[in-house]
Length: 62
Image (cartoon, rainbow, N blue to C red):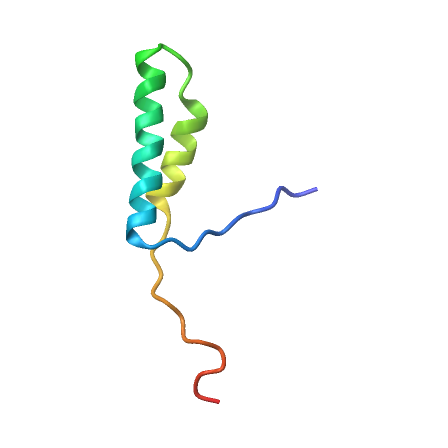
């Protein structure tokens, strides 16, 4: 069974908040000499996320 994939629609400020929160958590884990792998992977996914422009409303132009 495949794991589900979740898509979030975030504005610039929400994206920044998630990025900064993950980075702060990573720094906290490093300071406490704990494993950062899970946070690293999530942070990489946020960094590599593709930016898309808002798509047209499906009812537009009909």
